[in-house]
Length: 317
Image 1 (cartoon, rainbow, N blue to C red):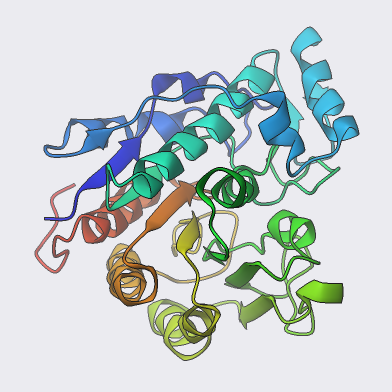
Image 2 (spheres, one colour):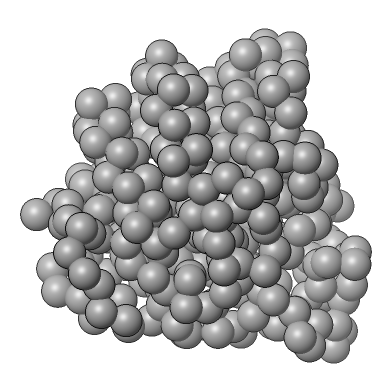
C-alpha cells in the first residue's frame, strides 16, 4: 500500500469567520477521525515563517492579516473575515502544507494530504479574498523550488471555484504550471480559457471550464482530455493539488453535480497519472467543501485512492 502522509489538527478550528459563515471550524472537526486510520505518516503542523509567506505575498498583504489579531473581527470583503486567532491559524495552515511537501520530497512518504483551514487558493499576492488569507499551495510551490531544487512544479486545481490567487501569483512564471478545472462563469469571475499566463509564463496557465449542472463524467473527461495531458507535457518534478470538494451536488456554494464516487474516480485517475509523470510525488491541500456530510464522504473517497485502496465497495457513513 502507498505510504501516505496526513496533516490534520484541531488547531485549524481556531480560525473564526463571521457568525454563520460556511467556512467554519466543523469542516476540520468532521475530518479528524481520518487521523486514526492505520499505516499513515502523521505530520504535525508548524507556523510558516514571515519569509515563507513573503515568497508569494507582498509585505502589505502580510501586514493586513497580522492586523486582524488585534480585533474581534476583521472584514476584508463581503465574503472574507478573520477573528483574533485567524492569523496564527493561517500561518499553521501554510506551515503545515510545507511540512507535508517536505515529507514527500524527502522520501518519508509517497504522497500526502494537508487538511487545513482557512483555504488558500483565492488569496492573491496582495489581496485577501474568497475565505482565503494566505495562499498555501503557492507557498508550497515556491518552497519546492527553493528548498528542494524542483525545476518544474505543476499545480492542478479541481475546486469548483477558479483559483484566481494561484493563477495571479504564477502568471509570469514559466516554471510553475497552473491548471484549473472549475465551474465557469462563476465566482470569482476569472478562469476563462483565454487566460494563459503572461510574459515568460505565457502558456503555463490552463483553464478548463465546466458548465453549471455538470458532474462526474464531465470532470473526469476534462481531466483526461485536457488537464492531465497538459501536466504530462510539462513534465514536473512534483504535482500539487488544490483539492476542493465543493463540486459535490450537495454543496451550497456551487452548481456542479459531482458525487462522492466521482471524487474517488478523480483520485484514482490523478494518482495513476502522477505515478507516470513525477514518480507519484504528490501533495494535496484542502480547499473548498461546505456541506459537511458531502465533504467527509468526498474526502474519504479521494483519500483512499491516494492510499492505493479501492473505493468501489459500498461505503458505510
